[in-house]
Amino acid sequence: MRGTEHVVTVKHTSAPRFPSKDDEARPALERFVKDHGRWDEGSELSLRALAKTLELGRWPQALVDRLRVFATRVNAMRVRLARLKPEDE
Image 1: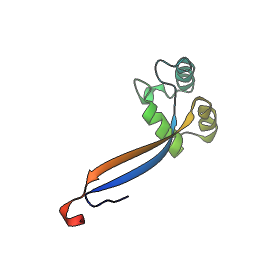
Image 2: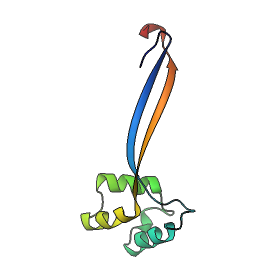
Image 3: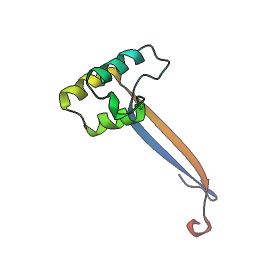
Image 4: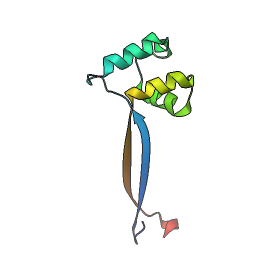
């Protein structure tokens, strides 16, 4: 969307999200990762890295399929308003 002085960009994203540290499902997730010998890939479970692993299929498919039990899909939208640059006018 564009006006005379500003432009708006909208970005839609969809990514897996895992239980946070205060979520009651978190201990089960951590136990799952440890039981499958993947805990050493980070000293603390990185939810961002875990989501990327899920998206990129870095682990064996059977393990990825079981990991999905802990994930929910979160859709997000980011709206940014920026002033037009003189060369864009």
